[in-house]
Length: 143
Length: 434
Image 1 (spheres, rainbow over the protein chains, first blue to last red):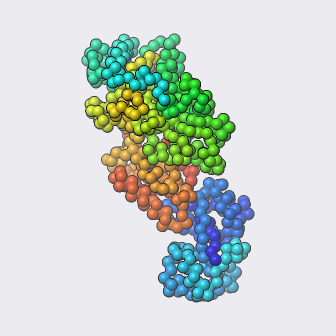
Image 2: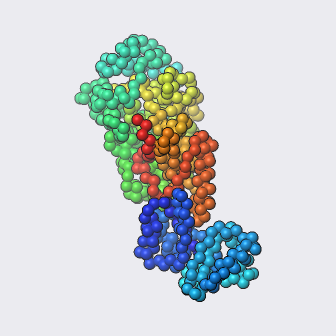
Image 3: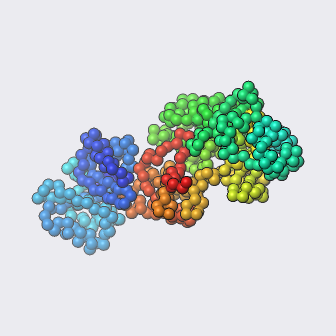
């Protein structure tokens, strides 16, 4: 029920993001979703890709600090109010979101919300009870 | 093992008698042969005949790096060039290098003292000594080399640099002893980790490290990562080179000064008045036996103190604790004295933080700002901003607690801090103070 995500440490230096994209491009790795968290001093790039292990390996070889974490991927219809209905469930259950990002799978049809909660297992139970569709690692990576 | 039982275990009284005899001879010779020293003594109103006891040494003027520079290159040599067989020089990053010379007997004496040093670290004949100290004008490489040969060990004169090849040779030749600067030893440990080489599969048993100040925390790091005992040694080219003082493997607690050849003093770094036994101050050395390039009361700028207790290893020489700072490296940040090694101690105390760091000092307006750069390794990396920020705050807080200074912590990508192949550059001081 959990999806593997790659996180990469970035110093605030021009060109570093392009170094990552270039490494991924050279190794034919496809990005499914991404988000960049930025602070005054550093950034954390989070990526869901088609081949997590390979991406981790090639990025490490190029000198990046890479971590793998798990996130939850919730499928939602691509229409107004979809995000809200999910966040209302999250609020009611008292779940705490560490971070989230979203993207559209296919315009007008469906989207995907990627969540990191402080208690991931509790969140899985909440979403399942509420009848939300959680995408598996295979499903997301095969998109 | 004690290499020279007779001298290294001399009872204090006999040792001091020997020191006095040698001091008198040394002062007389320097007075006679070097006009510069003679003039300084005359200016201070002292003659060699005034030295009647060891305590009389305080009548003599100090020698500083400035004196050495003024006499560049050979002005303080006491023998004609026909008697000189070796010349070394310091790096001279600030101004002219300081040049030192050795007679044949000086080289033999140096080899003897480095033999004692290695022997105290448990090195013996049959060992394969991987000497990664730089060969060249720097005294480290050749100084250690002669000692290891004299001991009967097999020396690999690999010098510094080309870390991959160093590791290959350690594996293929079965090096049992590593001689290097501590920062280079860590660099080697990193390279091994990168190549997936487990140091436990090597035959390395002990490392003999010197030429830069390093903390106890760094020792622990080196010992656990390379799976060896890490021994600290001390020396400086102006006095001789490596082999002036050395730890014993039995205690690893303080470095025994080769007192039959060097007379140590501790003076107040501001007033230059002699300090009492055990008090902390600037370490000063007078060479007692050197021929080509003796020094009288040379101010080392290293901060230390003397430990008079006889060590369990049996050596009677006074010890100095691990040197963790030089007055040269000392940063004065908003009036607070800070040694890089104190910051090192804090950084290494935090689980998972890499031992590579750099301190950048800037002046903004009239305020000094200090930034400590720390590399983000996988062990401390998190995909959550708050975890990394917490780490930065923790380091900041501990430095403030220990040193009383506020600094900013900058997390940087791995391998961005320059790796040492000799002496590590820990501080970048961008203040324009002069």
